[in-house]
Image (tube, rainbow, N blue to C red; front, side):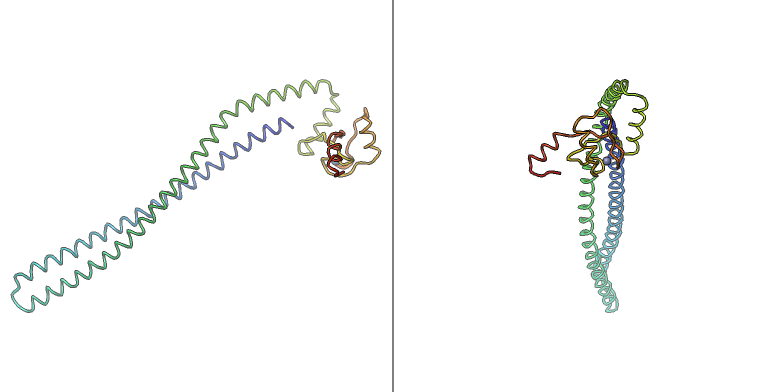
Length: 233
Ligand SMILES: [Zn+2]
């Protein structure tokens, strides 16, 4: 079980790295999209600014023309041009202001996106470095536990060992389980009273749970604690 727990911890940490990497990628894509939108708006602004400059130029040109006006027809034409160009200027300025608002909104979103991305990257880096540190530790612990298991296994008959491994495989890695107050803690079913008495007496024969088939032992401490709390199982 201890080996399984260490292996599980290593697996889960590695899964965290995969998950965090995917999240970093997601945030990067999101940021790229916002930056793309921002560039598009800035381009629109640039072309509007060009149009605005044209309007300004038209106003200026026609105001110059007004100084050397020769007849009423020319005066009317220039005045009309100036008015149209001024109206155009106002429209362009209004549009540019709206784009400026959008640009500052997008820049805010970019900043937010960058912060989120940086936090996520930091989280990923921390996880990756913890794996590096832990890997050695996990391997060492697993090796120790496997040696411990091998040395204990030496004194157990091969047939019993085989049975133990079979139960472990079928029962989520737990082959030996305690009985508290007559209840198997693996499947939470009551065991027959006779078997329970035998367990409490310390039978030399192994006793198996009739429901989940795990090897049972009596947990007298848990029972005492429960009675202490006044909550018998
Ligand atoms: Zn059971």
